[in-house]
Image (tube, rainbow, N blue to C red; front, top):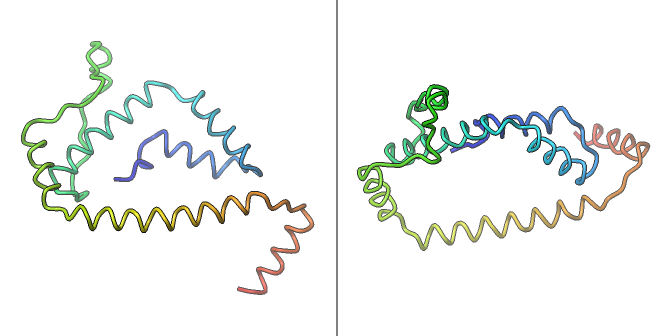
Length: 150
């Protein structure tokens, strides 16, 4: 499930591509501004869609071969009947439980631990890179060096 498919997250990704931040703090500030600028109805629609998609993913046994469900949120809003969350039927719940029961949770936890260690190492590298302070002349020199290395 790729939440970047949902509107707000796509907007944040677009913001990162169009707003050229030079520091970590500028990225944080731009993201916070996006949260302030976003229409709450847009967020509500996105998260309702996410919940509907998650329900479909369970019924497709984790695959993404489903059609994105449409629940006519605009019409529901006009009637004041937009749900705060999406419920799932007993069949969806039972299917999800059966799928989980088939998983080797020890292996899943081991794989998650390995991935977490790798992510933490990458975080350490990125944190160290954030402390590097390059002036524009140094950046230009580095790009010349990189072009010769390719």
